[in-house]
Amino acid sequence: MKKVVLAAAMGILSISFVQAQSMKNTLKVGVMVGAAVPNENAAANLGVDVSYQNLVTPHVGLGIATGYNHFFGKDNDLGGTTLQNNSFGVAPVAALVRYYPQAKGIYVGTDLGYGFITGDEKVASNSNVNRPDGGFYLKPELGWHNRNWNVFAHYTKVFTGDDGKINIGNATQKYNAGSIGVGVAYNIGLGR
Image: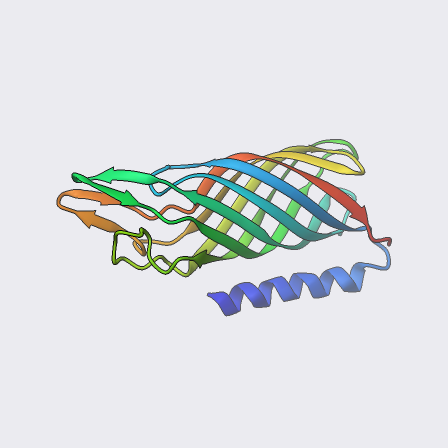
């Protein structure tokens, strides 16, 4: 999966550079904040985004995205035991797709790729369950844009399957690396 995602990102980047002489290129640098959903093992997140976008048409942007998203761990009562969940980070490698109906106004888009999960080896400091290493990364967003700024609402999720799940008696805590929140990004033009 990692090789497929990296190959797709490199392919999009190659296409973007081939078309760069006639299309607008932008480096986007931003910050985002959110609440973990569901919030079993994390409470909130704070992150930075860095992406490269090439407008392949006046309305469609393609590129690559990365950054770092820190999730703050929280205690969770599970089956009579209080789990002391560790904080962790997500570092995505993703393809970026955006649709801009107008030169200024509403836009929609998503980032798709792989999210590498970093941090303590264990899900909780009082558990022997290992945290996942990563999974499929998805970040759809809806926002407003102009030449210099993007302001957006997003849902960010790393799908980890059953990795990191903790069972105590009949109670279960699934590992969550997902959030809903808002962000802002500054567009740095790189020319045509």
